[in-house]
Figure 1 (tube, rainbow, N blue to C red):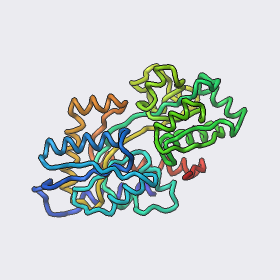
Figure 2: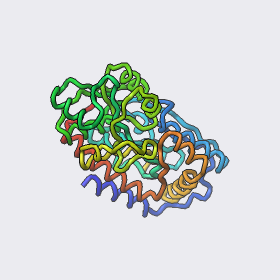
Figure 3: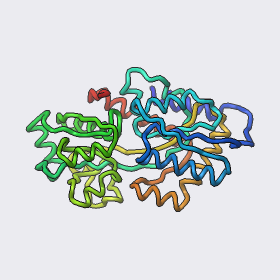
Figure 4: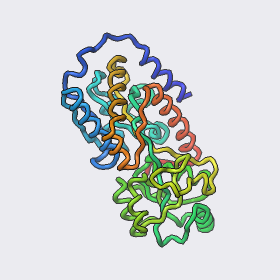
Amino acid sequence: MRAMRFVGCVLAVLVASMPARADFPDKTIRIVVPYTPGGFNDTLGRIVAQKFTDNWGVPAVVENRPGGGTLIGTDAVAKAPADGYTLLVVAFPFAVNPSLYAKLPYDTLKDFAPLILAGQSANILVVNNDVPVKSVKELIDIAKAKPGTISYGSTGSGSSNHLSMELFRLMTGTNLIHVPYKGSAPMVTDLLGGHVQVAFDNVPNVIQQVKAGKLRALAVTSAGRDTSVPDLQTVAEAGVPGYEVGVWFGMVAPAATPPDVLAKLNAELNKILAMPDVKQKFADQGVNPAGGTRERFGEHLAAQIEKWGKVVKESGAKVE
């Protein structure tokens, strides 16, 4: 029902009749990133800001508003003027937070208009080299033999890292201890040091440690093999049929933004994602450009909210 309600809100915004804004944009565009600088969310915001400036001749700036599990920056955009001059970079937690938090300061389903699905990637399941497992099956076996003794790191409650493992635990009947961090860098540092034993993390965050033999990769979370590590099995292939987690990145605007402004933003974003230099920057971080219509992203968000709502409920995942 929540998913259908979201699609309904998207369609309502799309068909709304509002005056044309032929002069858009004619002032500074603000792109809010609800994360600290660094990482792909920030990279996406800065790529788009630079291209808006280059292509439209108006300033476009990135404003990092981290904190509260992305809630602070997200809420700021929900309450911003709906004129197309304040945009939000969103990622996996945007669709998880409605079910993870008992109460949000905004309504994910009503307060935002989808702009574009910008890119998609995968997580890699990695273990510290001291952990005596070389396959997903061996990890499951040792986790079942010693329940509650293996700890896993994440980049925070509601992150793709967190929910990747919660889904894994749910589908394999294993019990691992969650240790949340404030970002990938400190989590990977502790993983290398043996303070946590296992983690799912975005491909670009750990691929160099895997190639250098500092971490052992067991599988990727995507439905098919990842081009960055084509020889690595998917979690589903490795013994957990039906397992799949897609890491994604996108952009939204306040819900009441005029439809013609939303359409102009979507068209420009699609042009940006098709540029060769942008494709290369995405590839350098292990992300595949996506693009497409606003409707497509709205459907994607609806499906993600529905899927992860069930996982949060069934797994008992909570904010820590």
